[in-house]
Each structure stands twice: as structure tokens, then as C-alpha cells.
Image (cartoon, rainbow, N blue to C red; front, side, top):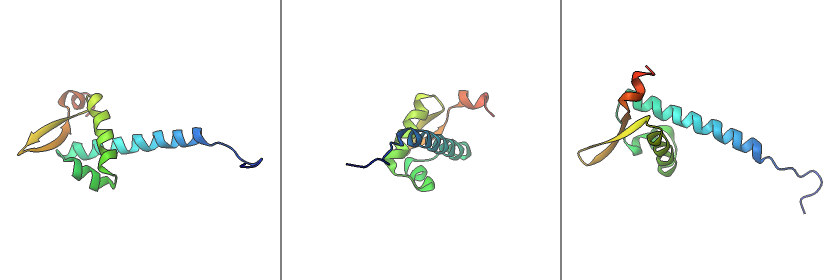
Length: 88
């Protein structure tokens, strides 16, 4: 159906996607280093969908890099003190 010149480039896309994920996580960490920040702030600052930002935030929380703090009924993301002591 696709012809002789057809080839699958899935592996290339996976490596590119992994690099993109690292870049986004690094950008989130840099935002949070400056100040506590909300999900919508992260989403709009980085130009990514809220669902995508949520996925990265969840990963960073599981890695104990960031944590959530509630202030005036709003969730803020901030650095995990233990993580930053060794990475300042």
C-alpha cells in the first residue's frame, strides 16, 4: 500500500520526544526555582496545554523534586527543600 520507499521512524520520534520532555521538565524546574507557581502559570509561561503540564508536574512530584502547597484555596508548586540543598 505504501510502496517500496516506506520506512518507519518511530525510534527517532521517541528520542526526540524524550529530549523534549527533559527540556520541559527543566523549564518547569527553572520557573519553580524563582517562585511558587500555579498550574495555569506554568501552562501559559511555557505555552503547553494544562494536561501536558500536569503530566510533567506529577513526574517531578514522584521524583520528589517539587511539592504542592495550598494557599488561599489555590495549589502552588514549589521546590522540595531536600532536593535543592544538594543541587544549589
